[in-house]
Amino acid sequence: MDGCDVTPANFTVCVTGATGYIGSWLVRSLLWRGYSVHATARDTGKASFLLSLPNDARRLKIFKADLSEEGSFDEAVKGCVGVFHVAASMEFSVEHDEANEEYVTEMMMEAAVKGTINVLQACLRSKSVKRVVFTSSISTISAKKEEGGWRSLVDESSVNPIDVVLKTKPYGWIYVASKLITEQKAFQFAKENAIDLVSVIPPTVAGPFLTSSVPVSVKVILSPLTGDPNLHPIIVTVQSRLGSIPLVHIEDICNAQIFLMENNAAEGRYICSASSSTIPQLEKLLSESHPSFSPKRSDKELHCRAPSVISSKKLTNLGFQFKHSIKEIVEQSVASCTEVGYL
Image (cartoon, rainbow, N blue to C red; front, side, top):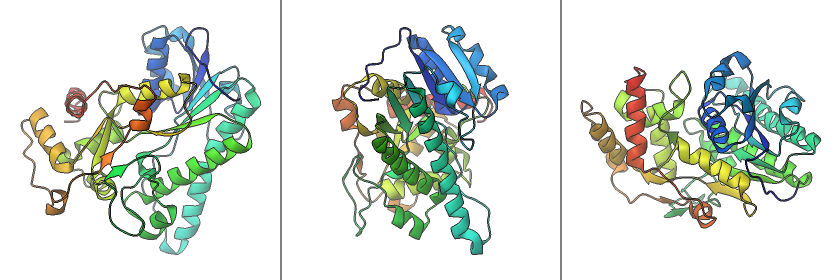
C-alpha cells in the first residue's frame, strides 16, 4: 500500500461518516471532481439526502457500516483506491458517577480506537486501497508548553500531551483524549501493516452546510452571538489552549483532504487552518455580519496577549491554497444559519 497516485477518472473512494458536516460536503466535492464514491453511514436512511446531490449521484453508493462492528466496512471499502476516514464520535462530555470515571473514560477511548482500527483492517483486507486520509482534530494540538508558557508558533509537532488532558480535564476533554489516542493508534497500526496513512488536522470548521441540522462546529462559531451555555465554553477553551481560534471553510477542508489523497509526496500530519481569530475579533466579525448582535466585552485576559500563529505551512508548502478568508467563513455561516431559521 506504499505510494499514492490517485486521480478522479474511473477511481472509487470511500468516505466514512458521510452524513456528517465534513463527510457530506466531501462526498459532494468528490462527485464534482469525477470520483465514484462509496459513502458509509450507521443509518442509511439518514444518508438519502446525498442521493439528491448534483454532479451525477449515479456514481454514489451508500453502505451501512458501524464503527463498533468489526467487518462492517469491508463491502464499502472493497474496490476503493482511497479511504477518507471522517466518522468519529462527537461526545464532549459524558454523564457518569465520579466513582466510575476512570472506567467510563477507558471504555469510551477503547471504542474510539476500535472503530478506526476496524476501518483500517477493512482497508488491509481490500488489497486495493492505496492511501487512507484520517480526519484528526485541532484538539490534538496545543500552544501551551508542558512546563508552562506559550509557543508563538504552533505546528504539527505541538501535540497536546495526553497526560495533561487526563489530569486537567478541560471542557470537552473526553473528545480531546479520544482524538489523541485514536490518531496515535491509527499511525501505529498503519506503520505495522504498511498502510499509507495521512492525517489532516482541521480546526473549527464553518460556512454553509448540506446537513438538515446546523453542524455543531458552526454553532460553536456562532456561540458568542447565540450565547449558548453549552457551546460557548468550547470556543473559550480553544483560545485558552491555542492562544487564538483557528478556522477553516468547509470547502477548504474538503479540498485539502482530496489534495492530500492525490499528492504522492504527502506524509504524516497536516494542520489545515486558513487563519486564526481571537474571540474579540470573532465577535467584531459577527456583529458586522449580524447587525442586531451587540457583543459584550470579552474577559480582559482574552485581549491582553498576542495570539499564537497556528501554522499550515507544511500543507501550503506542498502546494495547497486556501480559497476562503475568516470574514467569508463568518459571513457564510451567519447567512446559512439565518436561512434555516437558527438565527
